[in-house]
Image (cartoon, rainbow, N blue to C red; front, side, top):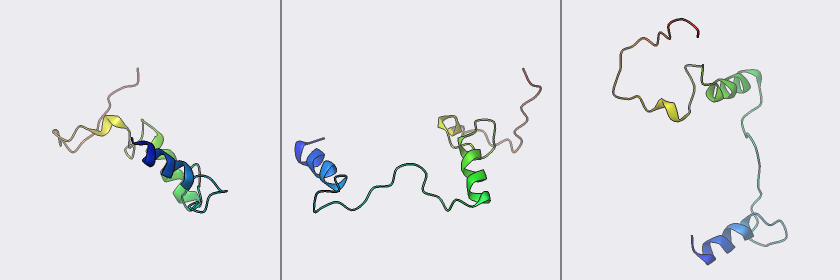
Length: 71
């Protein structure tokens, strides 16, 4: 990343700079129960809605996600 790019990024996150456009940290969903449950499921590796790195199994579309017994 170039110095100018880093400077611009710093300016956009600095509330004392004229280029500041606000910054929200954390999750920015609606906050209702359904939204929070969905967000939790997306972070849970045991959920079908999990969006982690292990979701790259696009080659096998068996249709069933049987996990067998618990270990």
